[in-house]
Length: 487
Image (cartoon, rainbow, N blue to C red; front, side, top):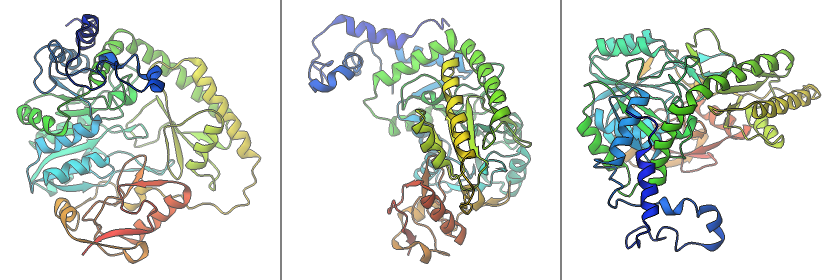
């Protein structure tokens, strides 16, 4: 196919050029009716914020521009079929769960999965079997799984319907997906991969292979995270015959709006074109600059480190820098604030680390600005006497079992979600069954889900994250002084 074209974007340009009177939704009428003060920011995008009129196709029944745009994306990313998503990877994960799982079926899930995976399983009525990830000891974060753990789990639970992995992690750590896919297929189950942070994988030789290249059956990517699409614009890719594509299309129409955003859809189209036409070459150049800068920085930084990989971690995303202080009383949240004072806004922080995310086209000026900010923070830390007692900066990873061990919630996820609950103080919840999701954000990985037993370590971790400067999503009490438990 001709990857120079962007059929959906071009169709929107034709729509704008036609200048028909818009006697249809949306209510801003191609930008004619809009707040005057805000118009200066929205004016250029409103004319293409269209709807399913002639020539613009229909996301839920694509036959024209959207259909061709999705085919071009499938070719560019190595899929047999690609679906555009306007609800982020969240929508893709919800659809994946509903397409693959039936009520009561078991599915093997990497425990450090995003909340959208658990929400999808809840909606589907599936019963997750959790498999504990390995811990990267320098950063103290959950990383990935050795494929042998998956093989053992499939033998232990022969009724498992599918395997759902997250690769790479939010921190850019990855596993051997090719071996994992072979193990799944030998066992006769499909491999689903949440590749939200790896849309750029496989697009340059200096990057790890993509999940599709490794043999995954269904892959969801946040095109807006690591490629230049607009926020909420993602893709779902399918290969092989293990996924019922008709069922998948049906559930996608359930979880996505019947009035999808055309600017978001078109941004997927042009992000794919940019990647193929320019991005792959720029990726290689950017990574070379970033790797060299990291080596040079690491030579003189004394109180700040940049994670560069470790034994047991199969792959690392070079577009992400995981930063931490060697001084134990300095949290990732503090580093995040200091970076902002230096004019750099980082992606996320946890009790120990802060994560910087670079673009597929990152010039030397951006890298130099980040490097200078880290150097100044390093000097600032060297002037701080370690007179304060070290902060206990645990990570959610410490809550889980030994790497590769499996577990199931005390109560089925969907049953626990729909059951009656009580609200009690956090310290009185130990030993009780949780009735809500407790999610430090970012990275959006639940500490607890409905049906799991609350332990003393959970309570300790919640308090540590709260006192370190983190916050929570999903819980009834955002301050986490109280928690919902099952009656």
